[in-house]
Length: 140
Image (cartoon, rainbow, N blue to C red; front, top):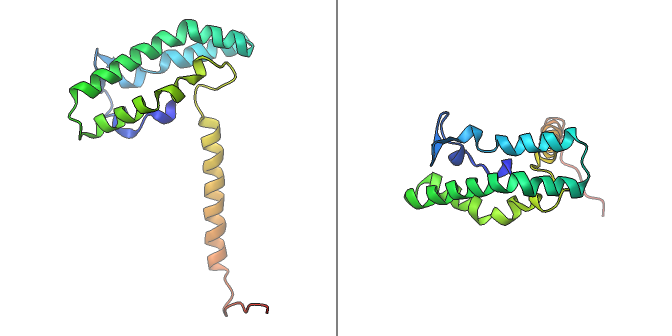
């Protein structure tokens, strides 16, 4: 869910979604529900039930806010484009409600990929600085 929030939707600090909801607070209830499920050590099925009971209304409210934003913003604005992107991905973004095995976000995966990418960039940089003085000859 976090990945669906491009910078344009995050907006400046203090920006509010339609209905007066601060952007920073729009997903806080979802994480509170996840912390509750973790604290209770719920099974995947029980976690899905909890999410359907408590997270689904939060997502519905967020979707209404996004639809309202999309209608009220000029179509060419960055906010409208970002909102449209989120709404186009809504089914995938809200899939975690139905399946208790899925995480709310993919932060862990993104952090691990970032580490791999930074490691690869560092390795490539070192390889360039340690290149041989003369070109390698092909073995024929």
